[in-house]
Image (cartoon, rainbow, N blue to C red; front, top):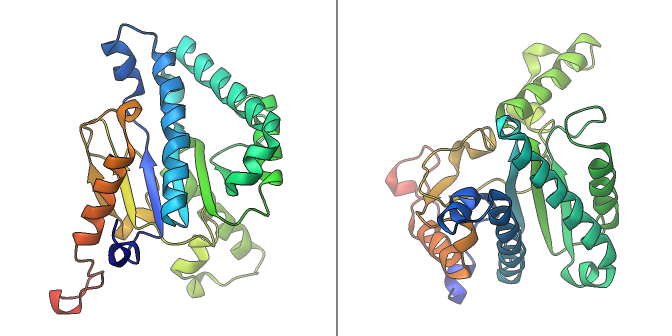
Length: 250
């Protein structure tokens, strides 16, 4: 992108990594092979976005609804998470060079459906990345937008019940402070490949004024050029945030 356009980059990009299974099916491969191919694209797009200077990224890796998939596919995805985390732990020097601040968001409480050893690995990965300052990379695992809002609302209910906050004084910021992305830049752009044109329970609160960019390309075929196309579309759009056209921002 040009120097002028780079100043208008989104502060936070959400990506729904969709189409892995279809990509594998088209090639006569098991669906898990599509997920493996998708991991490689995730790493490449993370690095490219960080090089461009995008401050924050959120990748939709596994939703609260994905548990209804076949037991074989779910087990394969969990094993892929496990292997990738173990591999990352062995690449300490590479992780230092990337300087990504990795965060895992979603319902990852002990005793839940995500295997305990995977939770231990990802929490350890988060601890090791706490001081990184290049790009925040959120990876949504067992995540649902409604679940996230409900979690934040329950937090407020507890505070109100203990008289720590008055219900009549609650504001939007109070709820945002209970979201997984609290303290991060506002979500400006959501990218969804694979031909689907819906949010699928992804970052429902945060997406209120996010720009949406859809593409027919399947995630394992997604390239830096597709990412550039999404960013270029974002730069061209007039973002009014409820104002008139005369008051456009960006």
